[in-house]
Image 1: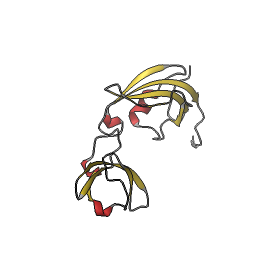
Image 2: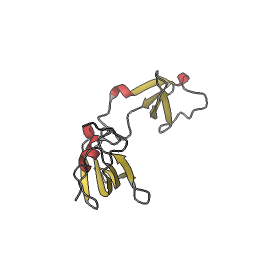
Image 3: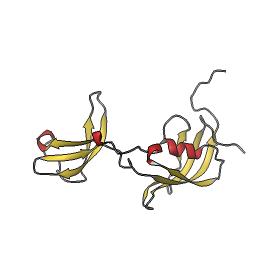
Image 4: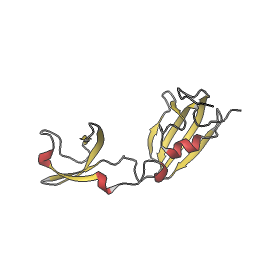
Length: 152
């Protein structure tokens, strides 16, 4: 039987849980997740858990935060004067916003605290600092190298 290797395009069904058991994402009821192994499209711990699987195989993958979304970075938590935010923006915990970067890109963030003059904005990934558990089933392996060119 063919086993998953880097460069393979794979399809998996998955359910992602926190170690508390809370589900944060799942492909059940939708199309399976498709990605190319080894291209960094998925978090490292997820890809490492898929390597070597065969079609139809089910397994549980334990992903420590350092192989998932990383540790919480204090430099990604900012206290900002309310006057620097757009007029009309809700000033409440849980408000989602985008931070504009110097290169023209944006990163998502969420308000985590609101005081009289300032708001605290956290731009860490919501799953940063958390160990994760994925229940996965490998649905398909396509050994084609998905547009990658290999020279021999």
